[in-house]
Image (tube, rainbow, N blue to C red; front, side, top):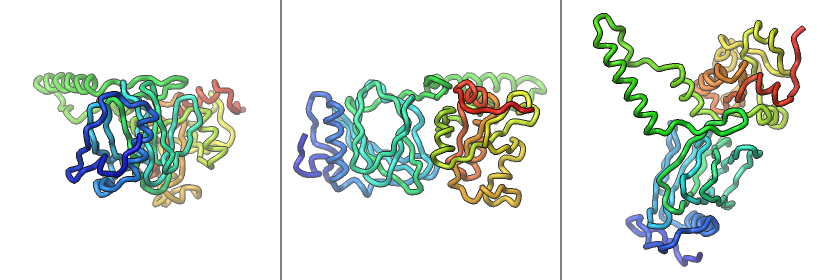
Length: 317
């Protein structure tokens, strides 16, 4: 596909010329994002948000659409697919890292389009120290994204947003009914532990035991055992893991804390925490992110999954 000028994509009112009537192949979408990235007229629309990724759809045709997304360090998508849409994206500025289930992560540099079919699930994140901007195209136009959570050896679909909203609405109605009872305790601001855990994990790019091992051995990540002593004695330990029990974790890794560990020198440190089965560790990793350690995460399945994967462990004497 060859378009002579950027006006073929963006006019003065940021609308596009009418597209072809047939759907685009992934290869055609790759060509589209490359040409769009090299055009003018869109870069001034880009914004940066600290709380979440910024994105805007700049073209919506009958057969494909085009999105621009900005990424600050630490921002990510989580595992997701694109419904029935094929797609392609290219980085205009910065670098991004793509994760696919069962594959090694790889860094994507500007000018390297990534194209895929409708059955494609991935997690894209900015693990660098600088912002990134990317161009995305989907055919047919994107109208659905399904989210997944890495659970041991498989990707598990997350509860759809509409179903979750309905569930929360029903819970709110139940709380209202309870609060109308004489002497009932007000619980309008309460959350269940399942909701807290889901919110924590939505922020994390959790690592399998093998990925955590590679991060420690290849990238200098810090593996942290937050289990209490009694649990370590019963279950065993991981050679080289730093022992920091959960009740002092934040004080030991906050660079501004007088009780910090010598290794906790800045917020760019990659801390990978694990517990027994990977539940408490998710809450702990989210707490570290709240302190500004944006690369903090945890091990899916915890110590049990590590041992099951055949990685080295030590039995306490």
